Image (tube, rainbow, N blue to C red):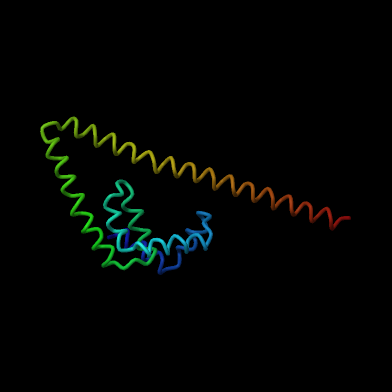
Length: 151
């Protein structure tokens, strides 16, 4: 619930606007996403339990989107009723093979650790390319205006 309340605090403080502008998301698109999250708000906590490796961002976005804490928490608890027995049964099956269990966890964690870094890298490159193109077009526009004023 900590990321949920962090998202809620971000939305209340108004700093969410700076995040939105840095990501390059239009205000209309953000409102569309927020409406979708609010429409399925009762289920977002349930979905969060199945979002392996993405629970914190999901919680943060749910809090920032204005989902009620009680509904989110109820969904998390309901999802936990399904995921906890699944996790316990996998642990029970692998109890006599700790090396296999550790190798499986390491492989799974490795994949989910690399994925966010790759995503961040690609988004950073995209952001830099977009800014560079905007700066180039602004410079050309200013040069064109300067040439027209000189004539």
